[in-house]
Length: 476
Ligand code: AMP
Ligand code: MG
Image 1 (tube, rainbow, N blue to C red):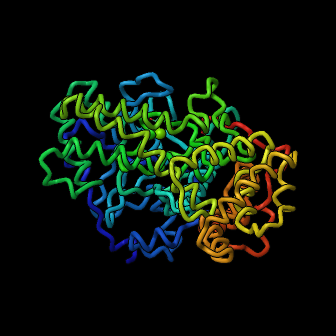
Image 2: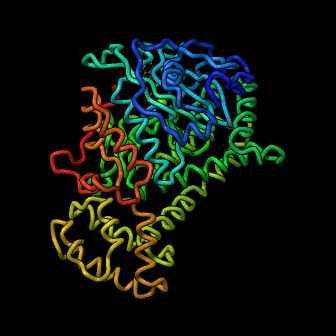
Image 3: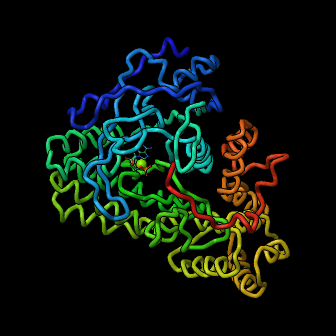
């Protein structure tokens, strides 16, 4: 449907007015369309062939029928410290279509901007735009993005950069921190209304349950445990796992200084400001649990504390089960059980000590037919890899799946491409000089990371040494 014929709804505005603040977007100067996502347009049912109208829409200049603009209020634990009021400081909601809530990220100040300018610079918008698509391509639930625009609008971040907006969509923008806001401010009526809203939005099958708030927490815990396992299995470090960046739908949201692992390193910290490594790669599952504990505390006015705590006791087991399942698939094994954890741990230790590229290892292993040459080439030393492969051979001999089928299965779960930071950096530098071809290429491989992409094989190699394991700052 053409943009001008579309009608939006705003279900969030039916909540008490403490939950949001109405605000108009402040358009960027001289906007231009950089990229649009046809798949997301199809999900929304929007015809994006009129590029001029689409640009105006993403720039907040074209208001669709029924659209009511607002920013959401939330709190959050940032690096373990509670901040009673955060909120959408630079994201403005513009309405809901086909169950997807649309936000303009970088469209100017809101009531919750504090000292911020409400803008997003081109580099941070490109990172969000490409990575949400890459996450989806990897089969991990995430927010998506309809389009990204650039502009001639100057924005200051230690240097002058250009402002940009991403129109991002999600089936829910409710965060752990949204509940923390109302619990901390003792607005229990709003807390209950929010819980009812979130259940309706995320877990409607719970609507008629007796203990729906307890079940709500159980669902969030299960989804979060699964998400943590998925991040660990694919080698993704989020970088800012504050409770305001945790979705009650258990999907990946708010892309900042994230990274995919280069060489495997469980201690890797992608966020430059995270000096103590609270959000290091290896800590993520534990932080997921810490954040769920903060959410449980916020839900105490609705559910007895002991009952929430009982549910939380299952987190570790749920996480491990998912992780084991995913690693079993990555290794091409028919069956895995708790006893195989040692074997997986041994493998990760081996990858870490030999400085092996995590993604490349599994992709190479997917072609393994007994000839070890390609695998041995990936590490600094041969002996630890050979010892591990001796054991792997034994595992494979217990497999019922034949070698060809095993290889096929593994190639479907071990990506050839992940968007590492050095690749994004090159696309960003190009984009800053007005050239977007690499952004288009990275979008293509993000959408289908398991396929071979002719002409783009360069991006499937190990990260060049000079770009390995670098940290990024939050200033975006
Ligand atoms: P983040 O680390 O991106 O999740 O942001 C944490 C909080 O800071 C959120 O409430 C954001 O909306 C807010 N924020 C981040 N950058 C800006 C900005 N440039 N202007 C206003 N608020 C911002
Ligand atoms: Mg955030």
